[in-house]
Image (tube, rainbow over all chains, first blue to last red; front, side, top):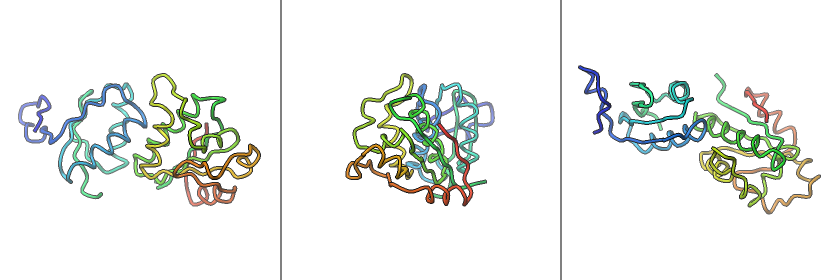
Length: 87
Length: 120
């Protein structure tokens, strides 16, 4: 479990089962790789993503809304995402 | 919200920037669970040939062949304009994985069933 520098009282929500450093990858490359990383996890597991692309603060929440993966926390460049239950 | 997404691309080595960005956007669509189709027409049809994209690598992007391969591996489809393909004397035996030569009706069907389309 990887902690995301949790705010007080949020420790349980802010732990991840896996971590992925996307570096400066952005746009379609970022979300396609992110999709693959998340689908490697079991439903309900959480992935901590570190993404430095300037578009990521808008793109990652939009992608989560489109796909049904749950964005638990967004503090750029850190994003904590819970894998959806469907394949 | 539409479940489909189309990217129309009319360039190949005559504008490698456009060709690359088109596939980056297509990858964003397929990664977002859209049934995604790249429609190659005019010069864009040259990208349907195996090996053609191997030396295209725009600065700041992944190599085009990698972007195209990832797109198809994720379930994306590539439709190739039949008259444009024939005009250039291209080879059906050299089509990349995921590519199908189609006529305009196939494009019209895909879009008419409800699909946004972005063009490069």
